[in-house]
Length: 95
Image (tube, rainbow, N blue to C red):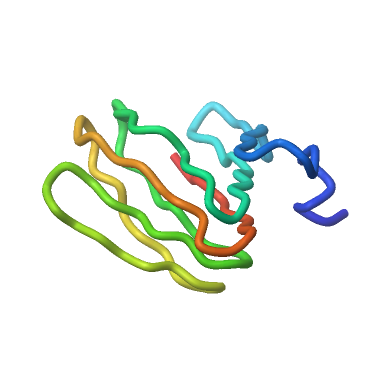
């Protein structure tokens, strides 16, 4: 299987469950070029990993990271954050 197969290609931003357990979960996220994963807050810390493409991750504390294939960023709980696709991108979010 390929992570790209989990998403509808035309949908600008797509998130789907990749793995769930009683201890945590992983979500496959697709952000197409020029599209934005809207501002939101998570109740638990998370790890965002760029599998393919290029995205900019930002949060309300002024952190701005550009992620390319293999890069990751820790997401703090209770801090507003968002991401923008610079290129069509595939990511995995682990909580």
